[in-house]
Amino acid sequence: MNVLLTGQFGAAERGAWADALAQACPGVRWLDDDAARAAPATVRAAVVANPAPGRLQGLPALALIQSLWAGVDRLLADPTLPAGVPIARMVDPMMNAAMAETALWAVLALQRDFFVYARQQRARQWQPHPQRRADETRVTVLGLGEMGRTAAQAIARQGFAVAGWAARERPGRSVPEGVQAVLGDAALAARLPATDVLVNLLPLTPATRGLLSASLFARLPRGAGIVNLARGAHLVEPDLLAALDAGQVGHAVLDVFAHEPLPPDHPYWSHPRVTVLPHVAAATDPRSAAAVVGANLRALAEGGPIAHLVDRRRGY
Ligand code: NAP
Image (cartoon, rainbow, N blue to C red):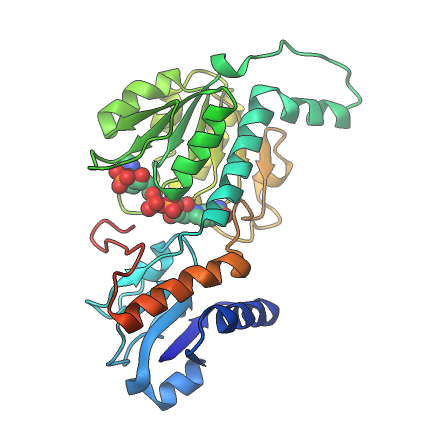
């Protein structure tokens, strides 16, 4: 089977993917953009990492687009994406585990004032603060999908009072023990005043873009923590800066930004109550993710069910 591998990789990154995919997908002949253009009718599948717009056009036998990234917002934004070709996204338990580690670290650091102590150290200031208990720290995780569910479970196991927000009732949804499911907009609005730490793990869609805005921050208890691990465009930056400066938001941990890399003159870099990470909350690891791709390419070859299909209408 001929499969196109295309996207925005550095040379080393492309090499790591090529090696891992070759091992995990025996029988696949990998084509780069030039090879695919030379024999477009032979391409059955495309394995993609934010491909340049237009790259997937003109491939008449294309039967599967497999994203190497979990979020498909940039892929779906390509107006030339061939209609009707199924899109699968990356769901890798190792990546979910990495995301849960980042989310748990941020929640613990906010609960126990570790960001405050880091700031105090820089000022050579010895100043203990009252110690908060996990079970009296209320955490709301936005998104109860692959990442949100795993993160909510890890945080609940640590003893926090956790709710997870999702869009709708879903038959067979598995909600981790100790996590309260909050479904729909009205239920979120009711939960926000009882949220000490808000962790965002939503996909970026028209419905979720700009959700972390002044009106949401205003519903939180004063001094709440914000942890954005999903997409920069979920958050309205001037609203966050205003809420931080007013004390309405106590501290923000941000892994994702409207413009990445974060520009050197951005106020977040030097804001005392912002912690910046360079989009590392959960990287796709070729060592485990290649097996996920291999399973879907095998399913395609054998006519079996493709896993982790994207609902184009919903955008995730
Ligand atoms: P997923 O499995 O598709 O889960 C999405 C969850 O969000 C679902 O529970 C869904 O609710 C909920 N949701 C979507 N729209 C909603 C709305 N309008 N209102 C309420 N809930 C809504 O996605 P995932 O694998 O967990 O990934 C989540 C996101 O994490 C990705 O899209 C990506 O942007 C981000 N990510 C970031 C990094 C990083 O390193 N920072 C790495 C990987 C992924 P239902 O269950 O009711 O449908």
